[in-house]
Length: 252
Image (cartoon, rainbow, N blue to C red; front, side, top):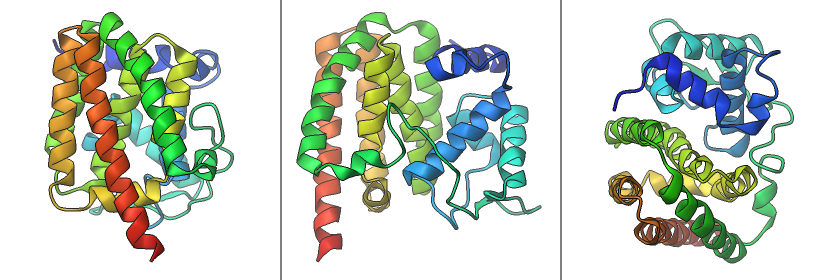
């Protein structure tokens, strides 16, 4: 089922509580600018990184290219991004101001140890993924299909993949219908992103994550909570193991 640009942008505004309250005062390009700033604040995107193309970034964040162009221009005017004609837009400043990722400030989750975060993530994701499997609609499934298509083209682009990966996870969390748990799950997802960047850049890592994601979407499409929870837990366990490995190497 195809989702038009305008309807997908309506979904973006409608599904995030903090956005709903600001619809009257703020445009969608402001909202998307904040989301890109959040990617920088969380460590998914860092200074010196080239962003995916305007088309790819718009697809990953489920908005039109016009909206994405406006969001990039906002961040460029703030000195956070640098736009160069004939080259990809780059991040030139990490200080994006105070940013809340889920229920807390960016990177606050990094104060906890990896075992505690993993246990909490499994617990919270069990609830939100089961809820998503029961409630997910055709429009959200179409969004996930679109994100899978973007991921399939990003096997050689770890930063582009991680941007789309976060959107994939958060889309599923929000589909649960529990906004608080979805925000908490988003915080847990953002744990130690500097290490996740290294893990995702390793050979076959993106292909493995893509296969995990495809299995998760298949279970969600079948509205099978048990299968969806099992597929998601396998994926989260893999994230835990690969992050732990990289952290061990980096601390030596």
